Amino acid sequence: MRRFRAWGIASAVALLAWSGTETAVAASGVAFINGVAHQNPQGCYSVGGPTVHVVNFTDTTAKVYPRPNCAGAPESWISPGAQVQVSGASVSFD
Image (cartoon, rainbow, N blue to C red; front, side, top):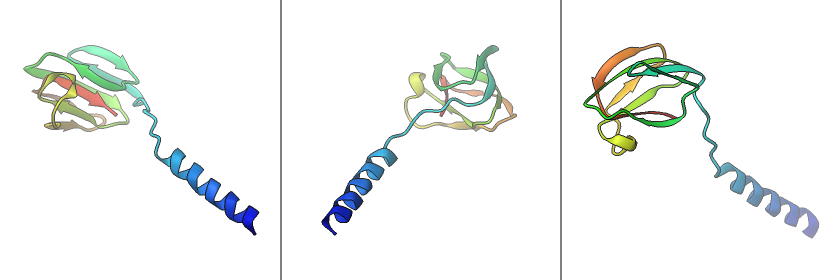
């Protein structure tokens, strides 16, 4: 009985440790940010602002931030398949 209880506790601890890890996955497809192609974009792209033109041919919604390095809260969301020009200084895919 003790052996089963110890195995159950060890399994629960391992599951909790595994579930807390997140892996970054790149978006599938291509995004054009101010005319520059990014294949399977991942993470943050600083563009300087004050406006950014994004063509999102990925499977992920892009987020546009008002400051470089994706600082602060996103102000625009660009759905897969959309093309927009909005004010912003950085774009993220995550």
